[in-house]
Length: 119
Image (tube, rainbow, N blue to C red; front, side, top):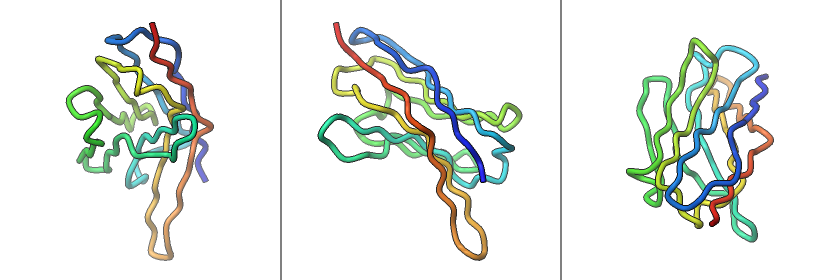
């Protein structure tokens, strides 16, 4: 089991920046994929970005070139650097961790942090 706690959300003006953090309750070295998802009001949860143990990243087209995902294994933390924020980025952002094992997989989720982009 691993608990994930997000932080860093808030209110920001269009064009601004925020950095989200996802702190894990134990080492993330063995977590195969860490990711960020978001859910806007009335919409389904969608993938924002993922990063594998090896550092391979993947981004939704809507955030490519603006967002950067990273992970610091020494600090048991994943990050999402968000630049040039747009009103359509407004959502609750969730941290996710995926652990693959011979017997199956485990998905872990944080409680979410609100990001609001508005003037």
